[in-house]
Length: 438
Figure 1 (cartoon, rainbow, N blue to C red):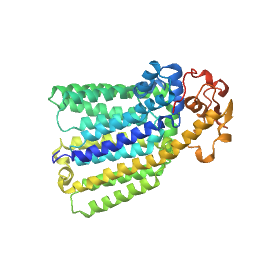
Figure 2 (cartoon, one colour; figure 1 turned 90 degrees about the horizontal axis):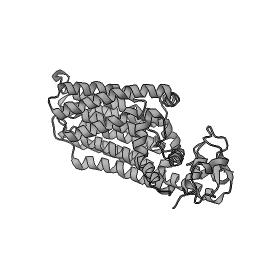
Figure 3 (cartoon, one colour; figure 1 turned 60 degrees about the vertical axis):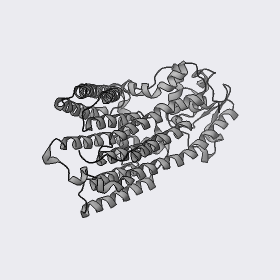
Figure 4 (cartoon, one colour; figure 1 turned 30 degrees about the vertical axis):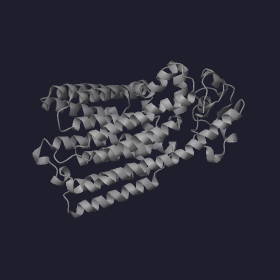
């Protein structure tokens, strides 16, 4: 892998966009979206990590800020919702950013990682309660570390070991990604002559193999099968369609960057890539429902990106399989770096625009909770244009989190698909001290 690395200001701009967007969403308590309020009720009510055993390590990392605060005596649910967002939104953004920085050694890798981050963030962050929101960037981070063209230093070992350890029990897609990482890491450990490299790669290989077992066991004994069936349904339905159009666009852009300059195919592919990404951004639906539907498709980004990075790494060791020179010497194509930056910016901007309506809905919901007495149907008090925060069955949980005092009302859904606790016993789920301070 030759050629100069991607300009650091370009790399840092992408990272800043990811982290800043996640921070804004966190401050607006977007961690409460969809199932998020129910998760927080369970975390506060039990002071334990909540979620399936097959995802326990990923959830422990994501829920740690809120859980530590609750055990320390914090009862302000507004502050606790923000702390939950640190794990569910800011942490994934930071992991994506580290992967982006480490991929800057080659334009192809940088473009693939940055644009995949844009797809995953843009389509799933409104359903950030999903464990895949963290599992996918952790998987990509390990892949980017294994792709590194130089021997690892001990800092790389720490990053790789930490990420692969959390991935042992984070999400069922590890049944596939864990196998890829185990084979790749074993290969790298065998070829390397560097002690940190061989040691770190061996850790990744062992942890990744263990993650395959944990994923299979978790899917067989926990809630994995129903979740997997739901994700598979939306994947097979290609729903939401902007996600898959974006994948096609990214693939076309990568093909254009890997083709020698001056070729008709290169420019045709580049035009198709720009068109597809523009269509995807224009059709993007930034709602919790759309993000819920996108979680399966976005999780597939991990295996595909892993295989692509593995191919880039392997071709550098097989002279006959090397890419055309234009793919590794990108000095004449540096202006094309505007594409991943523009794409990430557009995807995140769409989320920030949608966040305004969601935040107004949250405030309206909170007002009605404090105004109500007893159990009240949410449809009877909340205007139809302010129901973005309503998630079919979580209104009772959200009422507990948003209440100004323990005597506030409990809003309930008219026909919930799941009843985690009887609405009239809602106050039993949380101590009266847990209230929302604006």
